[in-house]
Image 1 (spheres, rainbow over the protein chains, first blue to last red):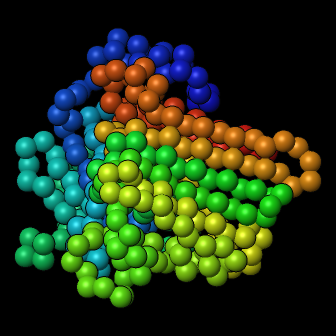
Image 2: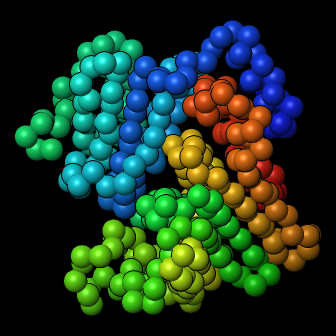
Image 3: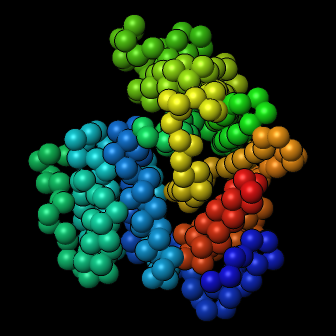
Length: 125
Length: 186
């Protein structure tokens, strides 16, 4: 992919996306929230978030919103990530390394199956 | 924290919690003065002198008022261990500026780390905030100061209804930040 840097290039991307009706706002299908408090950052939350962005970029996914928020209060489980797909209940994952982020993307977000190994059960929350 | 770039992410999260609308992050690598200076400046709630003391030293007061944790004391300790220091300028209603100074060549100075990733995640994950990042490089011996500035306001205006997390926009932002900083460092 060529390096795009000027605002002109960005305008092209925008016009192309509008032409393809590639815009699904408001209300993206998938919401990913990464806990970015001090414990989360120290545990590697930035690289986890970066991995989700990489996956969106490389797989060309247009209906996912990624946000970051403060401390979830689950320090020993950091990095903590909440995922909400469509109308389904929100799912909280713990110890989400970039590797686990890959799994969540493939199995849960794209495959519809919750990754049970990293699930934080409701009673802990 | 393993990187200065992670500390900046942490400081920026404090600014977000303080209801900032505009957040500026400046990083300056100055080989002439042998300093690495990193700062985060916001137009958020601000703090009085008492609160500033609390965020710097978490052990002298009871923890009821503030949301800020150990990030700032850890950064202060790291900076002081490298012949530098931490400065907080703040007033209620006037925002806050936190500046960390390190001796660039100090053996204990933690690496600057992955600045593009820090900037990219902040811009994308807090689209409601106006972000301005600058990276300045003053080379040793000869050559002039080189600077890279990233301001997300014109980008947002250009995008209009297209969300920041559109895959091609992520790609655009990532390349701009990575190349911009690499270029200034050459």
